Length: 349
Image 1 (tube, rainbow, N blue to C red):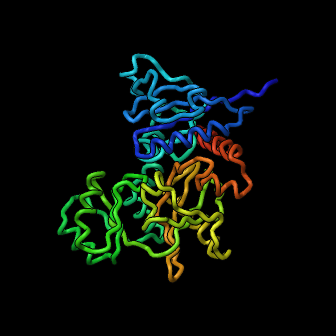
Image 2 (cartoon, one colour):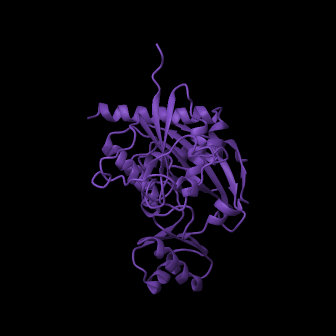
């Protein structure tokens, strides 16, 4: 008797600055899907939030312009005129940043009762909000850079609070945004107002945090109740910090995999990665980003990405390939975790 193949909705694109990276991630997943077990059903979301199914032929050399051709539909049931998307057994929502990674799409999939890869709506939203995530880290006794959160653009008040409670330089960030968009490094009080204005243009809440001198370390985590934690990797930004241009245009940041760390430090970082993952009620996969402060060696959690870049050259796959996975077996494992979590949720009803 032949094995029943599961259909996998690979959901990609989306309304964020990481639209093109999502296309690359989806293409890599499609290319490495185990065809003995799974049948792909790619679904593209354009920048306007409209959805459509795409063929494998269209995915051979996709870009945002070519994918725009075709018949799109809104996802809302009262707007789609009865035209639904093809059914699937599980969804891999490889959406990076707002309107995807922030919990909105996981919530939609939870409402639909569809198994999916990655964190649920609560964990996704908590991790996406830098201020809330850091408050939870602090409550759990996990070191993170000192920070302040502001909800109103009152420049004099913000300047006074930052000068009193933080050391220079500081980073000013929107609370809910990815890809380093709207982030500024501020070295002196005179530069603060412009950075605050920029961050508030992207979000109604901003975070100002103390800049850390040290090494930038990343760890990949996957699983549900039982976690698999990679060895740490290290990135060395070409610019003053790993900004949008370096991530997506210049590409001059260098990576060391695994990071050159003593065994004790590496194990402490891996343990903290698992604690941070559980602290935000995550599941499926995440990349946990750290600072290793120099001098002193203090380990601080910076943030967690619940759907990190997923191309063959992205840090998350490369860290698990180091542990003996292939790209294909890694994709399969993540799909298995999604199915496992869905079954367990069903058992609890």
